[in-house]
Structures are given as C-alpha cells and as structure tokens.
Image 1 (spheres, rainbow, N blue to C red):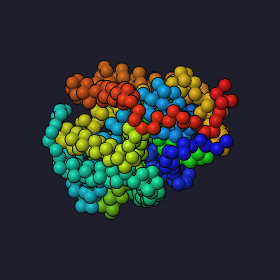
Image 2 (image 1 turned 135 degrees about the vertical axis):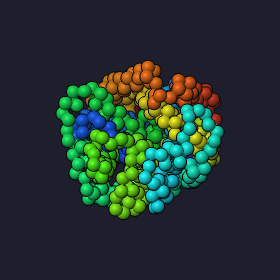
Image 3 (image 1 turned 60 degrees about the vertical axis):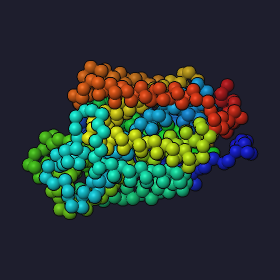
Image 4 (image 1 turned 45 degrees about the vertical axis):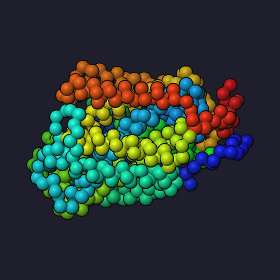
Length: 515
C-alpha cells in the first residue's frame, strides 16, 4: 500500500540518500566523547580486556536501542514529541523530556567547541607555554569559585558567538542544504585528519609503550561488575541514543529506507572511530611519558577536557612539528563537536516547529538565539568551567539514563508498541530484527540502566561532586534535572498549535502485527 499523504500538507524534507543519512548519524555519534572519554575508560577498565564487555554492550544495548530510536522516528515521521504523541498520546511528555535535555546539552556543548576553536588558533604559536594547566584554567578560562558569575571572559565569549552564528546558519538551511551538506564535507575531513594524527603519533618515540598500556589485557577486570557497567555506559553515551536525536534523524529518512543496515553501519563506524582515537591518544601519551621519564600510569589527565586542553598541549609543545599536529588535533575536535551539536539542535528546532506551527527557519532562529544567550551568559564567565562540569555530569549520568529507562519501559511494557516497531523495521529493512530484540530492550537494557542510575545517584547524593558546595550542586546539578522535567511538563500541556495530524496514518500499515 502506498504511503498516506495529506494533499494539503507540504512534503516533509528528507535526506537525499542513505549515504547522507548515515554520514549525518555518524557525525552525531562521533563527538568529543569518542576522543577524550573512550581511551581513558578503556585504560582504567581492563585495557585490552575491556573490548570484550564493550563489544557485548554494543550488541546487546547500543544497537538494539539505536534500532528502537530509528523505528519510532521512521514510522511516526516527526521529531521526538510528535513521534511519541503519534505512537501514544501520553508519551508526548517523554519526547519533550528528551528535547529539553538536548537543549540543555547543546547550551554547554557549544562552549567546549569554542574552547577547541581557540586552541586551534593557539596551536600555531604554542601560546599555552610550558604550564598548560595554569594557562587553561587561570589565563584562558579565568576560573573562579563555584558561584553564579556575571564576569564575561572575552577569550571564550568571542569564539562562542562564532560557534552559535555558524550553528544558526546550518540549522536554518535545513536538513539537506544545511545538516546533510555539512556532514558530507566534515565527516570525511574528520576521518582523514584523525587518521593523519594517528599515523604521526605512531611514529613518535614511546608510542609502543602507550599502546601496550592501553591494549595489554587485565583479564581479572572482567570479574568486576563496574567494568561491565563502564562498557554499557560508554556505548550508551557515545551513540547519541535515547534523547531524541536519532528519532528526529530517522524521521527525515525516506519511507523505503533500509533502516537496520544503516544502523549497523553507524554503530560500527562509531566504535571504529573510538578505537582509532584510543590508538592515537595513547600513542601520544606514550611519547609524553618517555619525554618525562615516567610511565603512563603516573601521568595525570588521561580523559575529559583535561586530556584535550592540558595534557595534549603539553605533548604538542614537546614534539617535532607540534604546531601542525596541534592545529589538526584541535581542528578535529571542532569538526567532531560541530557535527554533534547540529544534530542535537536539529531535533530541538524540529520539535518547536511542529508544536507551534512555525516555519523551519523561524524555529531554527528562535531556538538558536535562546540557546546562544543562555550559553554565552553561563559558560563564557569565570564560573563557566565549573558550571559546565556540573551540568554535564547530571545531564548525562542522570538525565539521559532516566530518559532511556522510561523510553524502553513505556514502549515495551506500557504501550506495548514494540511488536509494531519490530514489524516496521523488518518490513523496510534487509537485516531483520528477531524476537530477542524484545528481551534486550525490555529486559536487559532497563536492568543495566537502572543499575547505572542507582549507583550514580547514590554516589552524587552521599559524596557530592568534585568538592563543590552543596548549594551549587543543588542549583546546577539537581536543578538541571528539575528544569528538564518541568520544561517537559509545561511543553506537553501547551495546546498543539501546529499540525496535530489527527488523520496521520503510519506506513506501512501493520494491523496484523498489532493483533
């Protein structure tokens, strides 16, 4: 049966090809976390042995939940709130929870891209000097006490304005002329740049020491439940799943697109890039350890922003041709961050467009202007780094995990739409999804995610975070989750002003599978 279309409705924009969709999805998944999170997590979680739980997590949680996102977006043809609403009206609130969470993440993620842009410029004259930590914290970010600061740091504010201007232009241009075109250019460029970095890193003295440190397996670590939780956590956070991005991206895919095969390509491309990043990072750290006459385990700053903006500049300053290596490295960070943030904001803009009946361009401008004002006001101040660190901790480790638990439970156990979504994927795809998928998304995923959530909440509630004052964690940590929850409730209660699509009919029709 042919897809149903309302004759009076404009045709929904689509990716021009599966390649365009795959590159955009890879661009969303491959972000800053691939570069600075995976290598450190792998090193601390059993080295080479970590690849076993990592692969198990990819196959049993990452890919199944990615398929779930794809199925919802592709079948119900909307950003997260509209897709969930079409699936089951009460589920609209889940869509808005994911979108408000995406909004929050975009607001601070832009600041890290701005830092990378600044360091791209700094690399040409190695402006960070010998004490890279002092330069990053004191001179560049001018970090103060945990407070709500109104003192702008111009060195951060200016590149942040440039980042938001670029994001606004891309989102306003739309799916094919903006997001797809950027990813078609940026993703091959990113891969080429990073392959070049890895090749250069492997030629450095001490590179083998770094690789041995990363890949030497500690088989005893496999008996540690924390290592398995770390593997699921890494897969989960690196694939851009369960907070609306992939639902939105899939909704722009053509009706007869091969969704599961595309998902497999995206998932394995993302993991391949993470392993490539691990090789490059630890080969470089091996060089640093040799230069300092120490060992890898004695180095500080092996993950997170400190790895990128303190440890790597120290390495770059000591290597021959460091200026070029540094420019390419920080250029790669900008590319990786940029392709991720446009995926996050496309979902936000599309949701606002659909809810309020706006044009795509009007929604894009409204969302990006509001985001940029909050972003510049909060994260280009002297308390920007501390605020970013706190908001990121709660948004990722609490917000996204809650979103995924609620999503899987609602779809599988409450609304019982998983059989329809499986049938949809199998009808349009060549790689068929078996019934074990129900067990993975309805049983294993909620159990693992709930374990992760309980552990993290207990730790944050009893031990705090990074020694920050309790009031600060209440405002920027738990307050972030409260803002997301309240925002989702308010946006759900606002009357639907756009096309509610009461006559929407999902295609292909699957009444038989529903029964």
